[in-house]
Length: 497
Image 1 (cartoon, rainbow, N blue to C red):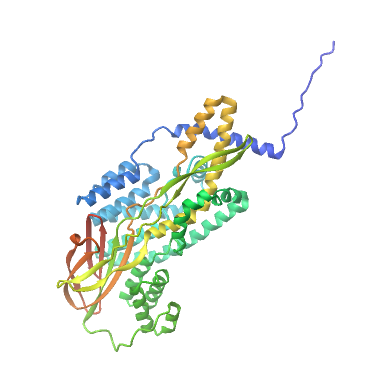
Image 2 (cartoon, helix red, strand yellow):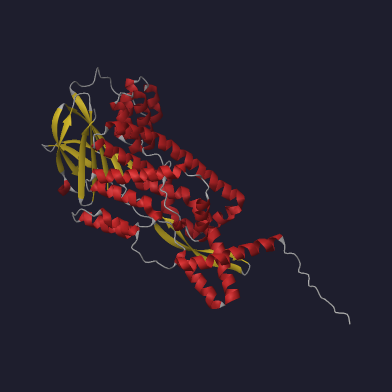
């Protein structure tokens, strides 16, 4: 008897089938981590704690910086803890504590710069962010936050009369703005590469949806009014003021010009550019701004000095989120998947200038807008959106496949649970520095040498006005840094040597 052996030959899968099966395996492997990450939710959030801090300040109390640790205890939020706590301590007039936190934040940024761009842990984090959500990555900060961190630390150094560190900080600011521009170009190139690698359809599928366009319309309008997210006229103006005090006319003029390019309507910027253009005999360059040369004056007014005001008002807004049903193709057909996107709501205009008066009530100057930090934050998110959308659509595709596979192999109930778990974990990254000032404003006064009692009157908050003694030295500059938030205003006066 001859025993017959039958061999079944399975046709080799096509390239498309093999790719689809790989995506199935990847998708199914996502489900258990997703379910596991649901455990431990429900902690007090970062915005909730910041809201409590703001309320305490508004009620006239000194908010305890220690409470920030409860919402920012994760190592992934370490940078945010340093930034928020450093700013709160600054508002509380605790300069030493603020300097310490800001130094820690600066070290964090330096560590990020020194790390290799692609590491095993970094690659793992990126994969996890693609599989779960962007919130799983450590918060590494944005360029506009880094620049403002350095500016705030520079103001702290000035208030401590640490003039040696002040010069180092100003030069570092200029350098870091250049580095921010380099990172900006690299991010644009990375997004373009993703598009070329076949993710253009994923981006367009969302960006072309009327529901997405309507939700993002206000944010896009605001972003269109800002040149980029990393150039800050407030920072440039401070640098120009410092260089001018050191009689470094060339760098001062360049910094003032850049500030004016970013905020062309600021009369303080206009006057300083005109003044230095005259000194440097470069008045032809004023045509670029449509400015007339400054009227001739034989010499600076004798026995006078300058007071420059740097005024920071209110807080930036936090990001919000909205949900959109996006059609995702799977082997079972097209599935509608809810994707949650970050965005900023329409920007509220709450600019409130500071009036500077003498003790007789005569108005000497009014601060002008140098930089709207909310505009920088909106521009930054707008610049990130192509990458965010691409990652979210890839993630949604994997999750849709995972839900289908769970349903097919483990039943309707398992598929439903997987879908619910993945929907609960689909959270956009809404993290940002929430105690950052909303508006940065400036003013400049020439006053006779001597001691002057000036009265600071915030617009719409006359009950918070302050009288402060300001020393003015002939031919020198005195800097006044003022922070005003609902319920509290602090001011510091520092003469430059």
